[in-house]
Image 1 (cartoon, rainbow, N blue to C red):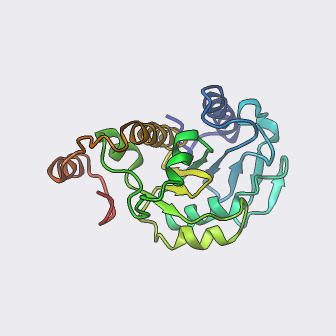
Image 2: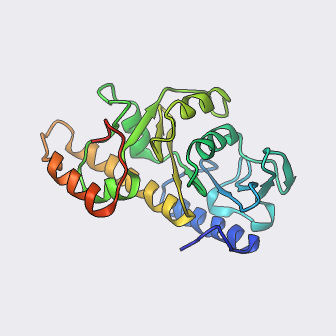
Length: 224
């Protein structure tokens, strides 16, 4: 587990590169798309640079920001800083954020029937245990500071958010948790598309409540 607290900055840089390469090599974020950030103990961040492929990151060139978002070292950071900052601000427990352009999640974000308060139905237990409920926010130009207001408008109720026509952004209390939740969201989106219009069995409200009670999950009122 890649726990931010107590880990050396060098180890955290290596972890970002290792997970980024894994996501890239499995086709979850093509080209130079996607970005990863970690919030450090001093309130500053490590974040992947702009126009950088997650498959070919250099630990020494990872952007180091102070708590106010000013670049201290490394390459120019991703343009999605407002997105990451808003999710950190609204999720006090978040120590890592992963944003991808994964195909199936992006596809789901374009469908007309999607409920913005609960993008995906409860298809599997792990979709709820890893990603939780998923919110949809409207389309914003990549890097548009206005996306921050949309994220803050969710009041921290969601750790997983889908940007319309763009892709998922997921917060976790560790980098590993954020990556695993993002992968689970993508697989659930794939299942949703495969089963669309086939009237699949969803988890029942009682089954969802059992997961909530047994695993201590926190789901928004409309998340299931």
